[in-house]
Amino acid sequence: MRCCFLLFFGLVAVFVQIRLRQQRDALKFPDKFSVAYELCGTVDPQQTAVLNVTKERVVYGNPRVRVDNHTILTPGAVATLHIQTTAPPMTFHRYAANGCSVTALTNNLGVAHSELTCEVQAFYVTHTYDGGDGPAESLVHVSLRNLHYIAEAAVDSDWVLL
Image 1 (cartoon, rainbow, N blue to C red):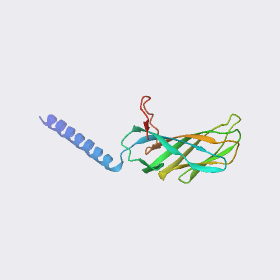
Image 2: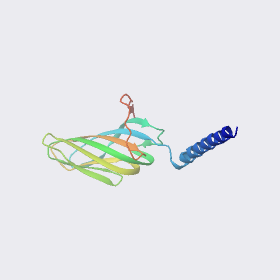
Image 3: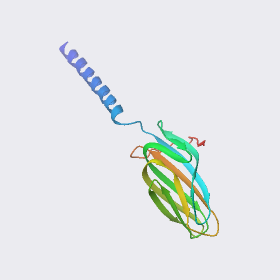
Image 4: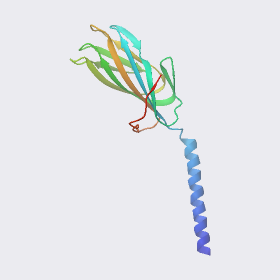
């Protein structure tokens, strides 16, 4: 009888500790989210342009992120930008977002790839084209997350056109 009482009391204590831990974690850690955006744009030589947000995909969570006039507004997250530039060969391009910037140089085929990571609140992406014989096209994939690691998205998750 005494053994059953101790076992029952131990199980209740474990259950209470687990519930208290879950409540504390819910208060301590905000809801985690990850959302992806696709930006694109065309810029003429010696010009700067703001890239247009064209697509959105929620990877996981319930993000409190919104787009207002091609500015992405978030309560605080880490943004990773994967940038592809198509322009005349050997031209310089500068991309900036929220004070972070990266410079890309197109190769002999007229293609450049870059990556930029920064912490953001509200940001938009600008493309500055330093010269060349024709316009430059940009394709940027933005991954916003408030986790310290990257979780893979499902292969069949759909993009939403904005």
